[in-house]
Length: 550
Image (cartoon, rainbow, N blue to C red; front, top):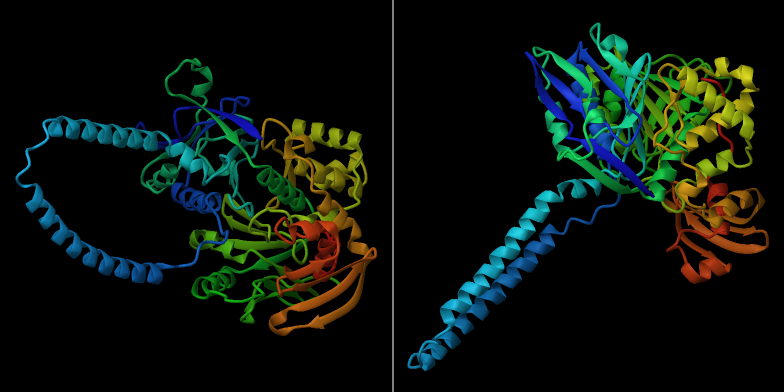
């Protein structure tokens, strides 16, 4: 889907009197939004926004293997062959030169050389100019969509979604983090972002007054201005769908776990020092009533005591979450953190990590998948399957949140039952209209794009996914066998269709086979068929999400 962005100038750090201004260029294609106030603690903001940068550029998709040793061996062999070829070439060249020494010099040699030399330099200069001019396009390959900033009555918050469609970051700054005064225009807009802006963040200092400026001046500039940049970004439908799914999951209540700073440090240090070679690659939360939660880092079975508040649930729980490597984005926040909370929605579902730093809060949401491809959203689709929301209630809740900007579930419950409200909020979040602020437990109106993410914008969902979710309740297991390394073999029937698959310790399909026509045509190249998808959901266990209020 193509989205228009219009920026006046570029974001960066500018001189402002005796201090500096961290100026963000807003998207002029959206309604006017502005903010101008002095930061009370610039260093704290610098570290927090730098952590947000790590989320923006996050991409943990599979990288090519390290072939440097092989390349070095190949280069050595090539050098040996080149030396042999050079010796033969030198001998042949001497013989040829001796043969043509008596022949006259061609009369047009010098003009021909100059023509070819000029052709080369024109092409080289053109290539260099195009490369410099296309630097923003190169950056677009890294960041699909600019981050958004929302100016609310009580906070200013920045949001981003990673390139690999797996991580969501939100930095909230209370109005108390700014010195008295300043102007604000409420709303949401994209802000111009570049790799150079990260370097500008690092120049913030505590001894130099710093203003946070979402510059409104561009809205008054004529469209003919030479510094006005117009970009048409082709946002992938998978990126939009993944963002909507993750936002929708964040509206659900879950289990809250409190971590101490040393516990988070221990967790990150293990992930930094070790690299797993086999699954499972999960964090297992062990919740026992009356005891502090424990975190088991698999596959090494390293146990970290949260040292936080005792779990108050009625029964023991074991919840596994994935995507843990992305937690390293929180490393820069450790010296500033006051407390850490984790919200767990259920095994295989997204987890939210909340770091409080005085007037600043950082929320990192991990989806558990690395790329929002054919199968990545099936867990969430299974959780929300069968839920229906009243269209009138959806519009009523949207209008109310647009008017009041934020509200708790209790403040909205007058519009309907809690269950119906959660369904309506889920739909609004999936459309990119609502975001849930875990730190203050309020729903906020925030249109991520100038239009809602409806099915027309996202494209139709694959019928294999919808049918796979529907068939998950009709899986008949004929044989289940435990294999080495935590793998399991399932032989099942799904509505009279026979299929079998090997499921690893992370719940992912390995070798698989099905008798349906979809599998016969594409195997697993286009993702699993509906029957294998139903098998996968059955193997992961539990199509229901924990709905215990936090």
